[in-house]
Length: 77
Image (cartoon, rainbow, N blue to C red; front, side):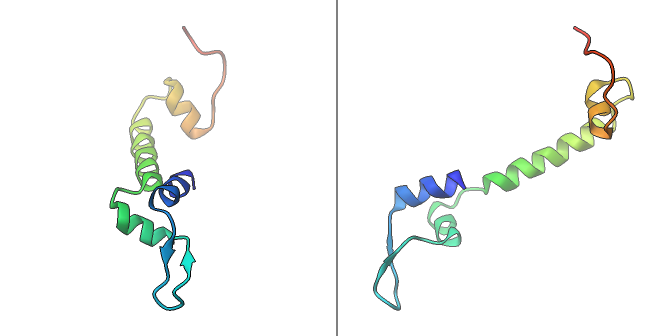
C-alpha cells in the first residue's frame, strides 16, 4: 500500500482516454510505469525460502522450534 501511494504521488494523476477526466492511476498502470519487481511478492518468496531453510535445521535450533510452533525455555546467549 505504501509503495503504491508513493508511486501515485511521484507519477501524479492521469487523464482518462474515454471520459477525458483526471484520475488516479490504477495499480497495474503504476507497475507499467515503474517496471520494478513487486515488493510484496519478493518478501513472500523470501519468507518461503527461509521456511525451507528452517525446516532442514535440527530440532534444538530456536528457528526450527518457532517454525513448528514449539518454542520453550529461555534463549541462550
